[in-house]
Image (cartoon, rainbow, N blue to C red; front, side):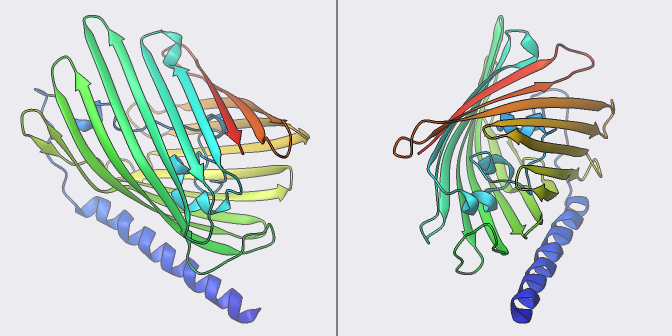
Length: 319
């Protein structure tokens, strides 16, 4: 037992060292200059398209939870927790304007000893006549234990994961495509879990004018506390070179009765227009038979001070 605890502590120190090193690099790596005469990746839909309605109901915390297909976006290292194949889909009418639509589709496979994996597609579509935009992100997610491990609720384990991303943009004035690589880590204890994700550790977007840019590197850190089998609290922090921190998210989930979950969260943004944004959500698990699987419906409400509020819906099937 003492040897196992020493090994876990050593893994935690190693992961913390990697996260601190990458965080330091954010401030040391110079960014490409941003002019005002053309579109940049930071102005496009390539940046910040969260895909888990369950997570958004909790304020967007999920880096240290990552126990369903939403791990593909938030922390692919958490995919090792998935026990069944999952198919997830989402559609969002952003701010209820009928002008910006976000679509998502994902299929994940549980680990069979060779690691867990998932393939996902995310699209942000804008119809602002006479201008139309389509931003597509296709990515493969992979998660694996640091050492051989048989997953059970009582196990303490650590894992790593990566996202391999292909990006494509089509607009009325410019087109571009590129790639990105995310690296992630996850540690789960009996009550607490920790996670870290480095987004766009390696990336490049090439525009139709042959101009090339890198995606802005971001580090997401998270911790979660499971105070009972039916409830948890989680905290996520997003940091970047320009904003340290960029966002702090706090949220929780509670299942008062079997099959119904309630979620609350709050987001503190540290940017030019800093504000607090409360969120709320609800989830329903609908078992349809052991041989058929389980259907899950999720809803999330996101408030906005300047625009209309956003209602998010998703449907997933575990089999």
